[in-house]
Image (cartoon, rainbow over all chains, first blue to last red; front, side, top):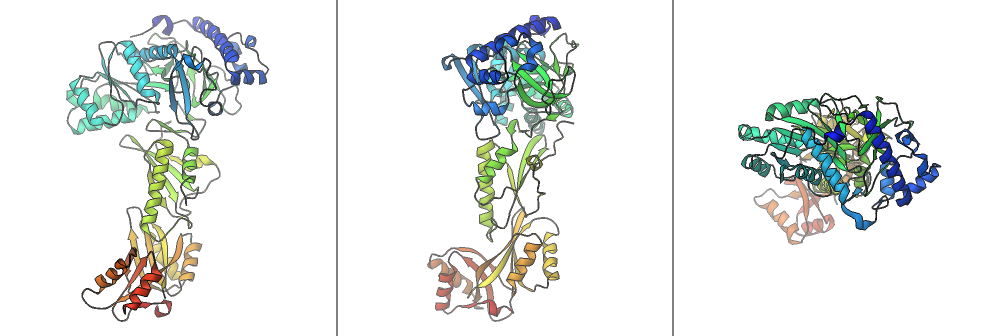
Amino acid sequence: MIWNEAKECMSRDEIESLQSARLVKVVNRVYHNVEYYRKKMQAAGLEPGDIKGIEDLDKLPYTTYQDLRDTYPFGLAAVPKSELVRVHASSGTTGKPKIAAYTRRDIEIWAECVARCLAMAGITRDDVIQVGYGYGLFTGGLGAHYGAEYLGALVLPMSTGNTQKLIDMMIDCGATSIACTPSYLLHVAEDLEKAGLVDKIKLKSAICGAEPWTNEMRDQMESRLHIKAYDIYGLTEMMGPGVACDCEYHKGLHIWEDHFLPEIIDPTTQKQLPKGSDGELVITNLTKEGMPLIRYRTKDLTSIEYDKCECGRTMARIQRFRGRSDDMLIIRGVNVFPSQVEAALLTVEGTTPHYMLVVDRVDNTDTLEVQVEVAENVFTDEVKSLEKLSKAVHDKLKMAIGLNAKVKLVEPNGLEHFDGKSKHVTDKRKLYQ
Amino acid sequence: MFVKQISVFLENTEGRLEELLKILAQGGVNLLSASLADTMEYGVLRLLSNEPEKAKQILKDAGFAARIDEVIAVVVPDAVGSLAKVIGMIHAADINISYIYGLSIDGEGAPIAIKTNDNAKAEKLLNAAGVKTLGMEDLV
């Protein structure tokens, strides 16, 4: 079902003229209300009048997470704080999170965007949907929740952490849909199979996001649980989940172009690329009031298709992600930068910066192992001191990135030593192939 | 009068212990005693040799994390309850024992290595009670 046919099926001309009008407005708003943006535009020799439509988009400076860091927490807010009603956050490269601030209208638009995605997955007001994303600063829980309510479905706000209860209520309340990370859903599938309960569930669809997943994972979910699985995309900085979603034809993720203006750039030359090119996805908030971002560099590598989809929607489709132009890892839905790990390790007395992150997916759950070299200066003859070191590393990491990592102490020179920090990571998951 | 113990960090992988011992053998180091404290993923190998500095250097050159610590080599009398008495004396003096292991050194009684948080005090009280301890010169 198409939730908002008037918008989702606009002609390309209509989309572009709407985008142009909205771009002019948002550029004016940030120029006049956000000092940081005004200075950036002035430094680029730009005035709001120079931006007459989307054809002028490439004149505007980019926004990166460094900008978010520099203006933390509310430096990019385009409205007075009294107009803001909510904040969400995701982890950044250092201790400070990247935050997003919303006005009441932003929350409503977000809910509608998510509702469009859910409708795309065939969900209606007759459905019972379990939200298995974390509720809190993370956008997943509340984002999916508000969207499902907006659509009129019955929402079970499960959050994360209690699979047994999720399964019990899935059966008792007759849940027909679930929103959670793909790896978590596969974990749920395994528990259902073990308990012999797959026949007892009424699940028809799953809306999975917050981490990249493969077609093989989709096949597994669909065949093991007898459901249809849909991929939902989003990022906290732009809004949260619901920026884009895939339809039943799985020809890419339809991005809501009336609210988000996508473009592809070359991450090295930082030049906008022609339509259809491969490169880094850059998105501009067209309607956001609280903290609209202009040309935000997502660091996700992909391409965009603009032809009309078999589902009837004209909204452009983000193709399969081919990787990241930075070194961010998404582990169990959590954004992790190797620099965070390095910073955390340096706070553990006695460790050397020689470490290796090994990310893998075992039984459909992401695993994170941190291998730390036991150099001579930290080695002692007592096992308990080494165990203390392991625990200290574990605890510091838990605090820094919010994940339980397995700490493995290795012999000095047991790890290859590199200069570049990206070599501190071995990702065995093959998510982008 | 302590003895010098070499300890080495070892990953718990197949053949690693053998590799280490071969490296020491090639360097001509004679080992008098060995004890391995193991965990799931790594171990701490504790060795006694009459050339501890040489052993440590060879291990370092081969890329191992190795260090030298002093332990008390106690000659426990060959009688029922002697070890309990020795440990009891240390405990009574509020000294914490980090680890102990048996030494394979020829001679009287049953020699053991003890590492405590106050080796000097522990050795003194043992000697005062007539318990014999060994020094490096006794390791031949």
